[in-house]
Amino acid sequence: MATKADFSEDEWKTMQKGITGAGVLVSVSDRDFTDTFGEASALAKYLGRQRESAASDLIRELAHAKGTGFGFTDSPQEVETETLEALRSSVATLAAKASDEVDAYRQLVLGIGAFVAEAKGGVTDVEAATIAKLEEALGVS
Image (tube, rainbow, N blue to C red):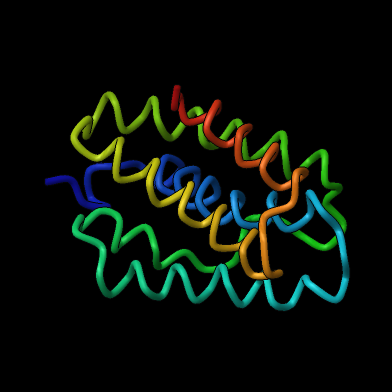
């Protein structure tokens, strides 16, 4: 089973950016300032649960992400581009180094996307379209 030690620092940061970026991307896809705090809380809560209960050691380690890798000045387009690139790169890295963890990573990312979208009381069409982009970047058919 893979652990953080099996990846370079850049690979690790990219995998974590994909995870947190998924939550941020869903949040900014349907912008409403009043929902931002609830969605940020949902992202933190989901990661906290994964740190405690994920079946995979690697996923538990990845869920210790600090920050999102994005700043307040990053545009929604920057968040989308960088998140989707991070996800594609992460899946390729995992396929090469820990192929048995690819599905767990995909589930983590999509779980975050869905949990953040639900934080406002339901998934909007815009959020569903964003989650579809996450699925595409992750290679989910």
